[in-house]
Image (tube, rainbow, N blue to C red; front, side):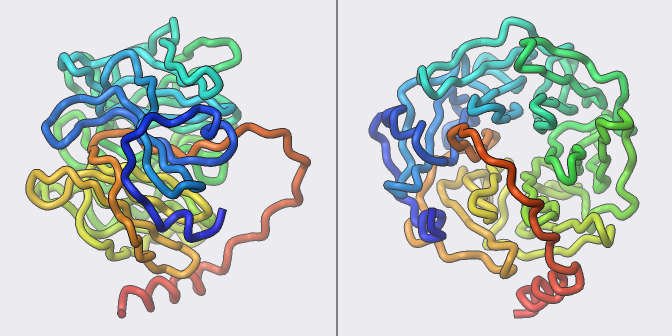
Length: 346
């Protein structure tokens, strides 16, 4: 794929053949809310060949918003969320591209989870936090093993209960960012789960502001926390970049505010799709950030699915790969910091 494939997007509505889906990487936007507040069960994909968004024929068994989305071995999993009827969900559905079909996983999670997040480690799916059936934020985590088709509740819990948080994997550890605690207080803190020691620790340096309803991504060895809103409910037009080696954050301006947007990484670039903008607008625009240059790319045809509270993942065909040499270490933090600082000053 060339860089141009990431920054040219047309909005399409025709049904899309699963044969094309199986042959190359795509972005998948699943579920969420439309501009009228309707809960969606549909999936739309951004195809890098045709540089367009297209709606898949098969949708989930039920609409979901505020759920967790993950990809393992070429299959897409949607866990938890809030249904169209307003029910908090403990169920999970699995999409198999070869069959172009969603099926419900038989065993539910240990509890309902709304506005939760997901991470994939060692082939397992971890679903973190979210609101339980009583609407209270949780500090627990469930692990799903696709091989045994079973859930296990992780016995170690976060220090803080969190919903509306961001979840991502960096350096083989799970980062849980921001959100809201059980008292309804927004958080600026970050907790990290190490599966080797089965323990949680807190990142020493918090974000510059509390953030909830955020999107998160990992690129070039750094964690990016995108948009969201602050403790006053103001939607944010910035993102923050965290470097583990220096334990420090850098604030980066965005092109407009976004809350409850979809975030995924493709070609080492951060794709930010939809979400809530100013007022009650559900956006149909896509923004692309290149962390190697510290710049937002110009998107020529910016229309994309008009959704918020949805899941966005980068899907690619499963192929047997030869062992590759270790990737080069990321650029020195000082260089990266100066690059981003130069962008901010412009």
